[in-house]
Image: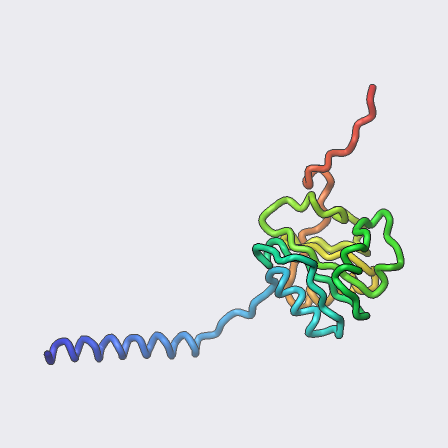
Length: 166
């Protein structure tokens, strides 16, 4: 019995030392993240209304979409906005749209690839909307350690350019 008590006391001592070491050791700061981290970072620094996309995605990190707006709007109003940088209109003023595209090629996003003033591509998610807010989002996410995936060409997205018939 004395032997098992010693064993348990040694185990308790080792566990305590490991626990204290875990709290005392320096942890590196988290840099970057997923769409939820990005939306949280932007909403912490800007007073924008957060409106989730309609529906309930199976996985919020890989399938969700969020609108950040300066004015209060419904998901139905926001979902009716055309998400195409070639036909950008003023209804997007004061609105940015975060769309998750993690784990797959984002060829289903009509706004990728797009001009740098309206579109940001971070690999796991993309941002589209008001050029002024897109620049604000870019600077906030850069401060938070998010790295841009850069512009993707149409061929990387599976959108091969049309070739003229001979």
